[in-house]
Amino acid sequence: MLHGLARFSRLVGGESTTLIGLGVLTGVVAGLAAVLFVMLVRGVNTLVWAWQLGWEDITPADALVEHTGGLAHEVAPHLLVDLPPWYPLAVVPVGMMAVVWFVRRFSPEAGGHGVPEVMGAVAQRSGLMKGRVGWVKLVASSVNIGMGGSVGKEGPIVQVGAAFGSVIGRFFGMHGRPMRTLVGCGAAAGIAAVFNAPIAGVLFALEIIIGSYNLTSFAPVLIASVAGAVTSREFLGAESAFAIPASLRQGLTIATPWEFAAYALLGLLIGVISVGFTRFMAFTESTIHRWKASIFVKAALTGLAVGGLGLLLPRILGEGHHTMTEALLADSSLLPWKLLLALGLLKTLATVLTIGGGGSGGVFAPSLFVGAVLGAAFGQALELLFPGSVGSSGAYALAGMAAILAGTAHAPMTGILLLFEMSDNYLLILPLMTSSVLAYVVAARMFPESIYTLPLSRKGVVLRDREDTALLRRLRVADAMQPPMDAIPETATFNRIVRRLLQSDQHDFPVVDAEGRLTGAISLDDVREFLREDQLDMLLLARDCAHPVETVTPRTTLLEAMEFFDHHYTYEIPVVQDGRLVGSLRRSSVLRTYRRALVAEHG
Image (cartoon, rainbow, N blue to C red; front, side, top):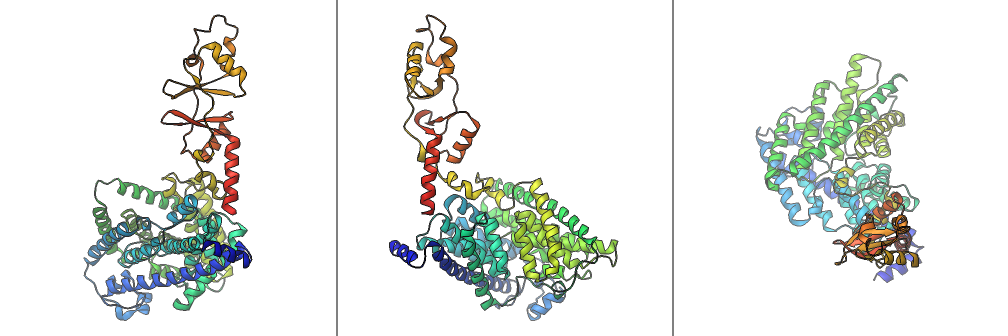
């Protein structure tokens, strides 16, 4: 079947044309998955928090707060119910434990944020992902979000779309870069469908998932993103994930040119906060992981803590899209600055507890929530200090969202274009750029890892320069090593050593013991000082003049081997396994193996 597909690929114009066609297919599938995901979250939200089925966009905060004001009543006033105060303490832990059981039972890869798992698959397995990851992630995240877990839809839909892209690529016999491109297509379509922002979907896939802006991937990812957005609009309409007030969609939001300094200061502050958000999440995850308790006990306790925080401020439960919209409205009577700061702090705590306790959901939306409320608080503070001299605090909320995405994800272009695309106001682009770029610079200087790369780097997966080094990381010394170099027994006499060195072109001779274990190496430089000495034949043995030698194992990556060659003046490295000499590795062999793999990758 694959031979027939390859022939079809040649007939329709080659791999690039085929990738565009598969990109459309991936985009439609990911768009449908996003629609299903949104419906599932709405259904679970309404069933759990309003005690009746329906598809209205009800949230935990709507149900828990008797008088939530404006937006909640406009969305679904007939569904608002007065729940008992203990309700979140029961619902959230049950949801967490259900998610942990479900993920562990059907697909452990579906746990966590979603985005780091996709990045790891691209870096380590050329985008190969199990198909069941998609539907398990879909169900688990729907339950987690719908039952009050402080996570978002965006990370899960990236993993779902990427998994379906991988399945499509595998079905059509794709591998290497084409497979990674289809994974990026699924991720782009997922973001485009959820946010109704196809341009941001493209940037997200190229900037974060694929890790480079190459022309080969651009067209398929672009068409997939458009297909995902169109599919989503057909079922969910043209609205964004959260409503952008009309005041931010039109008109000038900069009162004076000096206000750019305020946006710059906001970017600097958000950059510092982004690092704190990232490191606090990693610290909490590792701390909970070290607990001597079962995963279900951890899920119950963290769920109980999140439910308790929800009792204090119900708005921090679930995604928080309604609260983001309220922050953009710039109504200080609805959300005063003290409440906004409290929301930012408690939302951060609730999110890290949900993820650390084994929840399934993304950190994309929670980070936007934190950026929105802190940006709005910053804008209100400026208005108190300089009344009438600054623009709307809603504009600062929007800039805070773009800035925190740039700082936490190290994706400034995605942050800028996502919020610009959703607001549809070109006059906002300069404030967004100012805050986002400065937030990224500060965050990257303070801490090199993003919220997505940090979990991977702790597992030993390095993602920098992915296009240039991905192959070298996947290849092992075993793929390039040659038979062992001629060795000298450690009991060899001096005259025998000299004869071997002079009669061979080999620069270094490994020295081995009676069991074949490597104990060192000898070169002509090691014996040169003894050549003038007489009667050393029986007195000086190989072990006496051998020098220590660095080695690699067959499992060492070729990237590590090349770094060794770059730092040591040597042409050949001994390869050992369990201490015994099993082969040798030359720089030329590494390059030759890399070239062959490169041809196979793109052939």
